[in-house]
Structures are given as structure tokens and as C-alpha cells.
Length: 156
Length: 149
Image (tube, rainbow over all chains, first blue to last red; front, side):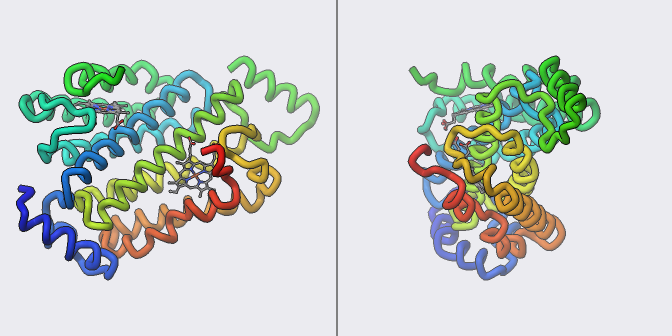
């Protein structure tokens, strides 16, 4: 999927096409288009960090510390971000804080990502319908830690 | 909650027009943390969109990132409404509130427009709007203390 040919294609053609406004997405390059391994690590790290900030914001909201009116927006951002996480981990690129088990046990890892998406969708729906009160009991269902315990290198 | 409603009650008794809805704001650290979570989320979302637009990220996620940027921008202004100096925010945020809030509103509007164009006309069209939709540096140059970052 991430062949050398694609790499060349991506690094040269895509940026110019993108800025020229020529239709390229989904036609020219239907699949992910990371230019190199570090891009893959950077990308998934940014995705996880986005979720980290969103989760922290939701926690603050659920504790009544910051505006409750934001809950649906913050939950929706988390839902959308969770939804793109699989693309971020699909290329098998070791490093960062990801353990090799991510790819050795891809079926389980990817199932957990699906569960994350389902839980985040549920939280977002609850936020829209029931506000903070509906979200608070569901935050633990996001099971961030459950996956990190198995698949993320614990920093000392 | 109790403190918030007390504050509201005091506001009513004193006949003070509450400029800023303080609901749920408990202490200053929370206020600063919260707006920083929003800003840091924006930073990571911008980074991935930048990767994609420079050919170093998965193009199929472009619209998703535009959508989250627009959503996050839509709550950014409110996170500064409580006048709590601190973090890297310069006092000018509140001294020049009219200008600051105008910039935040424009940020929210233009990023929403980018996401809408992405949805309706495709992300290649929306990509043309990215620079205008993300006026991060223009605001930081004026309102963020770079020494405190």
C-alpha cells in the first residue's frame, strides 16, 4: 500500500496539485499518502494529542469547571478525530510510543479503535441530546487507558 | 455550581449587567487550562492538515480535519471571555477586547466557511481557503506572549 512509487508520486505531485486546486483527493491518490516514516509517526501523534486535549476539555466540562454549553462541540471533535485514527495507524511504522504489538496484533488493536469510535459516537450523541449530565457517566467508556496499557510504551 | 449561581445572584442584586457568562467557571487555573486545551487541540489539528496539504499525510482525512478546526474555532472566543490573565495571554486580550473578539469571530466564520466549501465543493476547493481560515499567527503576534510559550 505504501510502495516506493506512491512515495514519489506523493512527494512531488500532490502539493502542487493541492494548491492549484485541481481535484486530486480520492481520484489520484485514494489511499493514505504519507511521504516518509516520520510523517506517519508525526501524524498519529498529532491525532492522539488532539484526542488528549479534547478528553481533557471534556473532563473539565464534566466537572463543572468550564462552560457546559461547549460539551457537544468538544465531544463532536473527539468523535471525528477518533474516526480518523485508524488511517493513522494503518501503515506499519514502528517508533514513537507505539509498541510493535499494534501491528503484531492488528486485529485486536483495530477492534479497539472501532470500539473507541463507537464510544465516542455515543458520547457525542449524548452530549447533543442530554448535555453534560448525559456525558459525564460515559467518559470512562472511551477506554483510552485500556488500550494504552497494552499498546503504548509507558513513559517513565 | 453554587459559586456560579451566587455570583449570578450578586450580579442581579447589584444590577450589574454581566458582560461575561460565568456559568461553571470555578477558578482561574481551570479557565487558563481550558483555553490552552482548545489552543493545543487547534495546534495538532492544524499540523495534520498542514501535513496533508503538503503531501505528507492521508488525503482522505482532509475534510475531517477541516470540520474539527471549524468546530474548535467556534468555541475559542468563549474560552477567553472570562477575564483571567495568565498563561501566555497578554493583557491586551481584554484591554482590546473589541479587536480580539473580532479576530476570533472571523477565525470561526472563515474556518466554518472552509469546512462548508469542503463538504459542498470538495476539499481541493477548500484548500484554497486554508490560509485565510487559520489566522493563528496574526493573532499570536499581537495577543500572545511568545516568551511564555
